[in-house]
Length: 300
Ligand SMILES: C[C@@](CO)(OP(=O)(O)O)[C@H](O)COP(=O)(O)OP(=O)(O)OC[C@H]1O[C@@H](n2ccc(N)nc2=O)[C@H](O)[C@@H]1O
Ligand SMILES: Nc1ncnc2c1ncn2[C@@H]1O[C@H](COP(=O)(O)OP(=O)(O)O)[C@@H](O)[C@H]1O
Image: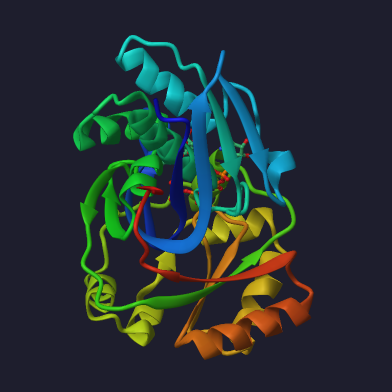
């Protein structure tokens, strides 16, 4: 019997996040262009008497270890579908900033799902796994798939996107997190009664991804949640300005924030922007990562 299974899962940045009006179910329709980047959590599952979650890493103290943890919810969802007990110990080695708009919880959900499927020999199809992911959260399917993809609906309906190269990013991690529902609610509040157009993927942005052109991508990136994140966390404006001054091609909030993302021309400029952000004192930590990278992967 397999003693344990470990799955490696990436973080994401949203190179475009177009947000439609609020739907009757409280979600927003999106054109969400995801790019998986090389910051990873590792989720290990092994047989145990009952479901248990542990977590290690710099932000581990902020991760819930009860049944609300997305990794625990994933194990429970798969077990329920296959009529078995979710008796596993899930250990998360967490390197993705928590509540930072980089989908760390979603990564752990997708990772635990794939790991339990392998540990239990469930043999769930890719479609079934994606269906469970979508039940767990809007971003979870992308964590499974990785690479680059356009998310429609609430972000769970994915179309893989072609990419023609590697994009080099710097991430500035802020103190504390931002609640995703609070950022969407602030977006609605700031929009007031204004007419909100249907969210559409930008053709220029998809072209830039396809050709691997960082400069063109920088000109096309956009995030409709950015004004809301900055409204809730005004100090992000100084972080964005520090990265721009340091020569980033583009500076943006990552998803719902408060992590900020800086697209750079090459690894050398990424180093330079990272050093300047660190020296600026406008963020808690600075990370360098490039993408696209592959989605949730079982480690040998
Ligand atoms: C904003 C994004 C961008 O990729 O991620 P983060 O930057 O937070 O990681 C996502 O839309 C977050 O996806 P995820 O974190 O999976 O959200 P869910 O658990 O599905 O939903 C949490 C809450 O966010 C709001 N929500 C989420 C998705 C969506 N399309 N519309 C929404 O209004 C709703 O208030 C919902 O109750
Ligand atoms: N495995 C997990 N890792 C991190 N956060 C989790 C996890 N499971 C549930 N959460 C909850 O999800 C919230 C959002 O965290 P996270 O997914 O890291 O950020 P974001 O949604 O901004 O990308 C956290 O505040 C935490 O309460």
